[in-house]
Image (cartoon, rainbow, N blue to C red; front, side, top):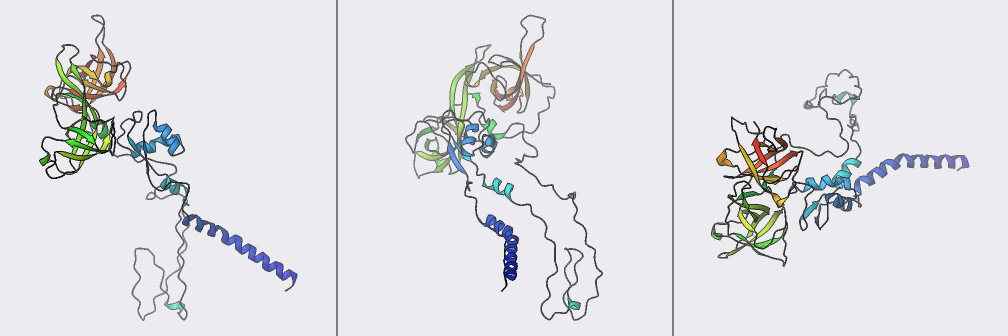
Length: 395
């Protein structure tokens, strides 16, 4: 072989290698999993001082991804309020990484299948005008020639039926979300006179504070009627409540701590085994129980229908002197006063001097209604809202 022919062969080998290399690399990328991204969700136990921002920075390597953690943990009603001891689900970024790195798929161009050896071109199947048509069964007759169809150029703009490609991270939203989400309603608390004796008596592990996924032992008044899977609301009386104007006893402020579910029931046993499925705050031995009822979500504000309701704020959670958006207020009006879930109340202060206008300081929406009291969430405020402030149903 001459030097010239040797050079020519070497050049052809190099060119062929360069042509085949991209497809080879692409095949390797598709078959090799990304080792740097976790493939499954993980869990994290909240410690004192944690924030979703810090947790996202540590677990997902980007603090701006904290909404992913919030979305994966629907029990967190307010992302600014997370409690030590609770467990969080940390979502895997693998699906997102794969979606963002995957090449754009294009429709392959259909090419006629090669003829088998010995097959005549006259008997080849005619091209279909539509993909919905089925080819005719083969016969001995020679099909009529089909006129040539000009190729249609690929459209550069998407058709109305096609959705444009989306880039970035998009969180789907419900078509018609409720005015107040389920977990805010469950955790809102209330003022009432519950005298339940059912309670948590201990736990599988020697702990003082319990949280999500902890196994506890409970005592109920009629264990024979309880079934595995039954749920109980966990609560604790916080303080006695008296009306700020009249001094009348209103009951106790009940703080909702979480939800548990019965997981084991031994025949004839006095105590049942349960798992805490959701926790809003620290749960301890002695925390009270009441059968859980799924809250009824509402999607529109009730019509006033001529109702004229005025009242007072009789208590606020954690005895705060300053309350703002998303804080809970407890009113001295309930279902016996025709208050309905979703009602909106103006919060105002009486004028300091007769003849002067009152001062409107905020607005609250009713979340939960009891017989003589109601729980409302602050929607907006222009000043501090406190116990004793006046409220009036918006007409």
